[in-house]
Amino acid sequence: MAVQSALADNPGGFGKPGGGHVVRLRGLPWSATEDDVREFFAGLQIVSIHLTFDHLGRPSGEGFVEFTDDGQTQMARLRDKGMMKSRWAFRLHFCAEGTIFG
Image: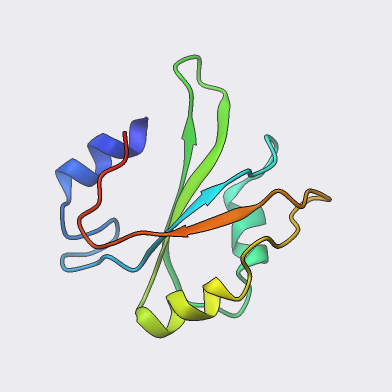
């Protein structure tokens, strides 16, 4: 997954040193964009969004969102199993700081 190298290059988090308020998104619609993710988390303070792609460059249905702090991450938790683009299978996984996904 392309995110693995991004995390390895910045072990403190995606957007800034010492980051780590990251939510892993699974079950995204294939057509989901960064704007769709921003809309889903409207009202929360997002540092960065990373959607992942397979080896052929197609959307993988997964991504990562980094929030500004624990409070924002906890508010994101309330949106677990939410609906995006008419799809209910959306799941949030809360990542420990320094976690690298393969």
